Image (cartoon, rainbow, N blue to C red):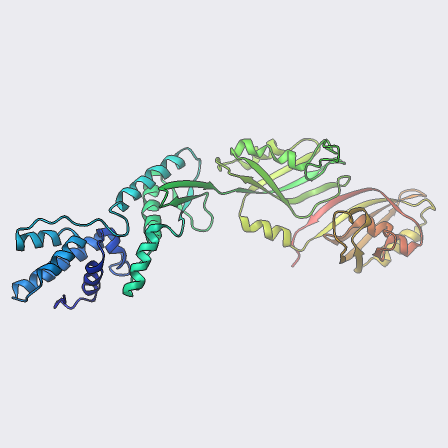
Length: 433
């Protein structure tokens, strides 16, 4: 059958409906690129009405249209083509069910909206995004039609369902869509007619101070199965789980100090990642009190962070200022202290992985820089040094040399054995330009 109306849309629609029964919504989806602002249900109805009008117009003009062809199209299209056929033949025919969705799509969308709204209702969230699992039987059938008939103006059923469910959830729950950083992902499975809500982690930008020694960053379990240290930063931060109604945490720090080293000054940057946080409306000042273990660990929660901040935090170039109290059995002279300060001014340091960590880290060569050292003789055997250097420099090894694995070192410059008695990070300097 050819339509004298000359519409490309109607010609394509006629070709589709001559081969496949389609409901209004599934037909409309094949023409989703046309009439922006309409939904596919309206598009499909409009196309079928225009198709019926075009065929009727040709009949009125006296053109012959085989009734068997008209019956086939009417059975595939349903109303109003079935009504046109009845008016011409006085024969009532029953339309076939949609080849793609079996006339279930409207009900399926409604069912998915109800399930999603029910799962989201109890969550303290503000933003969401909807996703639809790929490869459903619906998607496979519609794609086969588009490819067989060479239709390029279609959109997938996944996109339509995602849009319709998303619009409904906005209205019902007063949520805002956020396609880059949503609080939750609503994942729909069309074949299973199921809804899965995946709660995005909550990221909190913080700084921490460690005012005591022998405090580990992570919980450290010894070979005997017991905690090696009584207190850890991870345990302190884990209290956020109850506040955010989450399941667990992961901490991301800009490096770490040894367990016997204090972190002083303004603190080291830290991001706390709270898994499955159902309560995302947290007060930073109140949370700071909760996750701190005074007087030994102070955590300052500054606000929310983004997932991308984690990689940024770990890749930033930074400097740190250390204070090292150093013991020398042979004794320090004033010249020794001066010599160290003069020899470690903007000096490149080459370090092989320290012997003390070689069992858990592979052998690598690090090249770092010491920018300046200020020294003070405390007694005949003790000296204090302020060391400004690159982040990632092993400062204990910078002092004692690690049996020649760090060059140059304070020990190699003086030709004396040195030992670090106490070490503190007294300032973490932000990214350098």
